[in-house]
Length: 360
Image 1 (cartoon, rainbow, N blue to C red):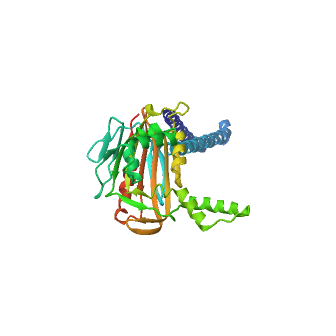
Image 2 (image 1 turned 135 degrees about the vertical axis):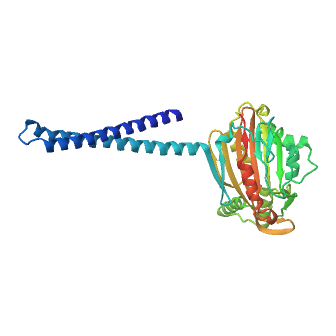
Image 3 (image 1 turned 180 degrees about the vertical axis):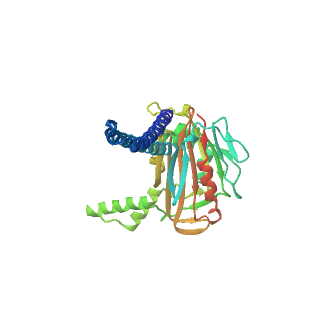
């Protein structure tokens, strides 16, 4: 399609040049006719044809200029549309914490990066630039079980329990449990501790709606009941804390491990499942047939972090789903502006996230 547009543009440019040449020739002829008219006696029979011929030639020039301007205008419009289409195809842009993140669709099916600054896994078919700066740990390969144990600070969970829970709660459980995960984190592991008042805006909205419905039906709701409902919705009895540190994580899932017949390996189904199960507040989304890019803004109310109490603690996350012939990839990164020692790490996370490439 691009070659046809270029050929059309070349043809229009050639026509434009030809029209300009014809116009120039006509103007020269007009000048010669004017000179001949001045040298011809008025009584000569040919004299009366000079003005008529000059008028016809002038009309011809006007017509030629009209077509030239029209073609040039159409060419400019087509060029603008073509450039806009290319821009739309090439780039996806989302916003996280007022910062733009942009990925290039040519990163799919691209040549993988090599060099000291790149992390390349030729077997799994991806590469990205490692985060730069002091404080970043070396890339670490972990299993899905290790990821879950680390996330929820529950080292006694066995792989068997994690696998059973994954398969019980998700049709993608087998796919995700057998995923291969690469993680690069900034600094040490930190913990966000919960209590009975820990909550999110989404949970508080649900509680308020429930209380309102009960009051409308004539039932009274005690403060103890609200606290218990909040604890159940947030599962703070089951999960008293979560691990958090700025990081970038690549989860590679083999399509061979999708063992549910009614599911395909398309990105939209997996995306909708992730959104349903994770339940984070989406901040921004951009999607096409080859890549889904989104960000979330997570506000945790009434938590403790590094021994300090926070009325509101913010965690921002970047996600991108894309695929090759054999694999599905979930690229994720997280960051918080309230982790003072890692505020500067945002730029490294952003550049590393944007640099991710897969071969088809």
